[in-house]
Image (tube, rainbow, N blue to C red; front, side, top):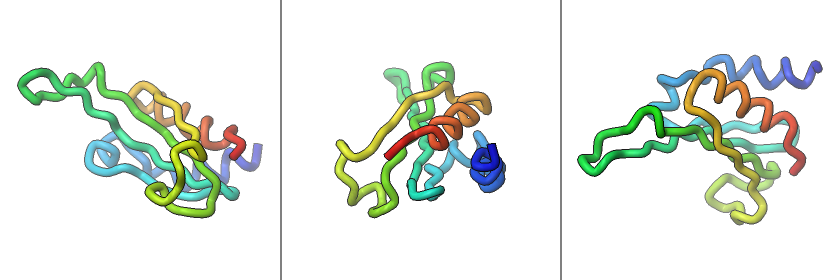
Length: 97
């Protein structure tokens, strides 16, 4: 359980308002990760808030996201909410890369 506390401490700054602006990237215990909001828009280009979601990627801590092959990354989508962020943190902690 100590591992969970170690990862959650730096991620306490991760908030919905931060993710509205930028993806959040970091590294932990030999893994890299990225949290990113996926915006779904209607035909007028307006965000459909209840359809937007959160994608979390995890990959081995060798290269940055752009220089890591897609097949070497794991990802999962979550609800775009505080609970979704918490589930994303669990995903990073539990992933084996």
